[in-house]
Image 1: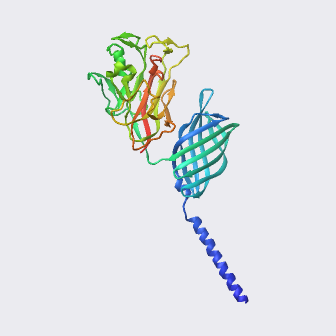
Image 2: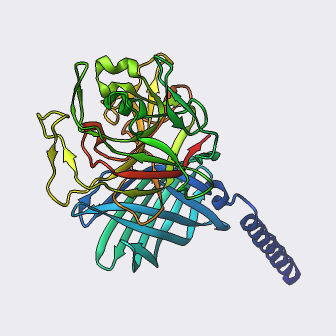
Image 3: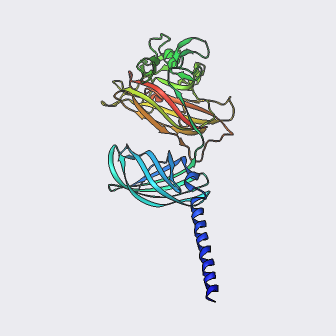
Length: 418
């Protein structure tokens, strides 16, 4: 009887050992949830600072697998507005976020840690609480940040990106002749690739009575990298009337992906700038090196005023440059272009990247993400045009700005999902 009991005990003990070993093997094997969700997520970022809700923007959050079922989250930068000033928050790096759940339905377990972040350029110790999920390829994330008494809530909803690549316009490719679409007359030179870029040169020459006294867009050896950069200048076109056309006092220099068609002049000067080239990728970010010097006197066309007689802005008003990009949908290659008249309000726009700046001390790098219009997204089955638009006067589309404002631009890069 005792031997029988001993045998049963040994049998049960052996089963328990094998069961424990099996459990250990399952823990060592199985799906690594960190490997399942690692990568870059692109989507909408909603920021609330001390109960003030900012406009949603687009951003990228990176998830890196650092151990089995454990990730690190990186949010490089976002901006909130306080008193009309953009405050940048940088360097949010959250380590050792543990995962649980199953493939396709993964939870980021609640985690609180103290990290050092940059708020407006100042290093601050911040306590960050993290909650989130990844369902399929969609990440939903909430960060509650206490930065020295500043309460920041960040909500993110984004999709896992596929292969990411970029196109660099380095201004080194052979510069070609800029030719009038109608008469074939040469109006200066533009950077390559051939047929990609247009400028306000043709318009500026027309507005100066075809004297070619000055061009808005020229090649420059004041480059940040390589031999060449592009120089963009706002001109004093004097104002007046010519051939029944009102001539503005201020003509902003602009370089853009697209073409300038003087044949559209009967519809208005701004209709001549036709923005966009065919594009079959999902744009994510726009970056470039630039330097800028604003001109002296700023002229602004008041509401109800005329472009040939702008008002002198109050003393101290400074010009700004703008470097923007838009993606817009078309149904066929024959569709109308977005023009200078409706550049950022056209209902066909799917995404925008917007940047403005005042004076700089030498070349600076900027990088902005594309913000997708609410309810719209990139669809591979549809047709699109894409335009980068750089102007030496940010208000140039209303013929306002400061003559002699100069923008230099080099190494323009567009990052996109293939």
